Image 1 (cartoon, helix red, strand yellow):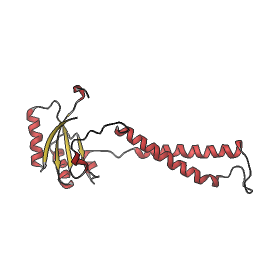
Image 2 (cartoon, one colour; image 1 turned 180 degrees about the vertical axis):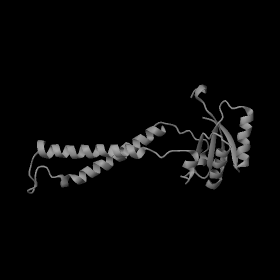
Image 3 (cartoon, helix red, strand yellow; image 1 turned 30 degrees about the horizontal axis):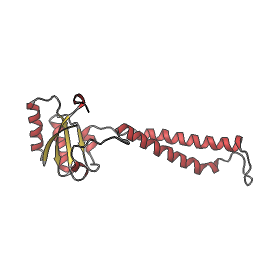
Image 4 (cartoon, one colour; image 1 turned 135 degrees about the vertical axis):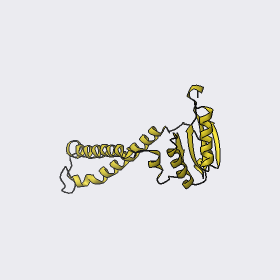
Length: 177
């Protein structure tokens, strides 16, 4: 990574989620711009405090499932009416109820694979991508608030450090990503 794209981050570690939520509320009250919040598990009520909108991944999932449904139903219709029209047990060529199991399975398959690929693409994850972690304990038992500090004055850095002290952060560190 070149030095021009490096990002300096000041972060504080908290011991539990209630401290974290109180610290986020305090940061919002002081109009501090939070870069990111990291938690080892989902914290109820954190998204609205950070101003995050609901994910639109389910909309993409609907269209992936619709693609699977259309492909399955269209392919079976073509096979049983045009390519290989054989009457099985007195059923007509086009027997939609017999298409339901395969149509359902392809709908689920397309939706699942499409949503996983979309999620990994949007989040910048994938094979060969090295994860940028601030502290290994964030994935285990610590909660973290991070502030981008590139280009901030010493007064602003002091204000952020005081913020972590006031809100009960157990540890404060700086890291370049």
